[in-house]
Length: 383
Image (cartoon, rainbow, N blue to C red; front, top):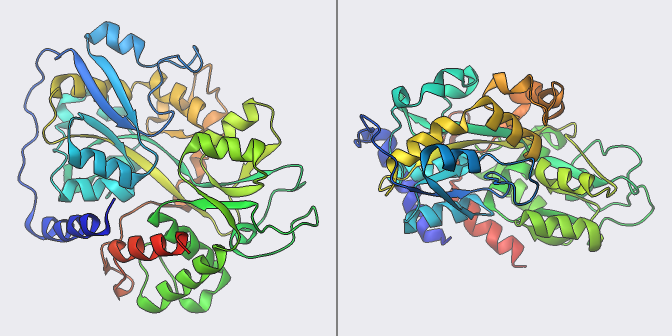
């Protein structure tokens, strides 16, 4: 996604927040149109093709007649680009994309009265600022979780205590340098991960929020990322490529999602994950309806279906995430009654959920906007 397009979106975001957004929500649901096109993170929309036990699409299609097609996206910027291009009904957007989509008027308000399952959503997510603007909802919560530190258990007999293993050159417990054996996320939002690390590493910087960085704080974060460049073997964005890198390319530590870790563990690879002492960034994803959706009735039927406790529990078991519907945490054979605790249900208040930095910051007054994050992080990766 171009820096120019992101900057335009952020300028629109500023205008939208000050002037309000006028599009009205749908008033009623008619008959399904027979099709539904979704942009989703890998592993988010399963129809049993990978593992027949994980299928929350087939039953929906039989019940509604809405044939589901899925386009996977590896980054939030890719999701924004796809939604800008059009041709999709829904997107499972993270917080670093959702406000951009709202500001760009690429998604429409949701009439929660047309989503009966809304009442079952975790109260902490119902009015979350990454999908709610001026009291108007622009989507339904889907899943949430942390960006974990994945590590090779043959190298690390004990879980790493700090993100320093991917940010600073050092010898790992096997006596070998981490240089070339670690990865970082291929997306400007990763700047926040570096900022979170420096919140604890260099408290004198005064960072209070990893998405709100004044110029001095931002410069220190960029210095850290520039130094990290010499350590990184690959910047990852494709979940399946990262899985292969842990298996075959000598990667021993990286930011990751529980999804990759689950796949590696299921394949009996020596990989585990942890949330280090500095904490973690994370994602709380929202299913959002395109402003020009061709199949809005099928979309609303999916919004309600996506909040079904069994769907929520099955997805949480598959992805390693936490359901947005607390009732999903009990009685699900795949997730088990311990699954929500295992996946971090109690960590909600410890996670810095992805946001799009706008340049307007509560703690710092004037902060560096996401357009600058994008420009500078691309330059770091290109060194």
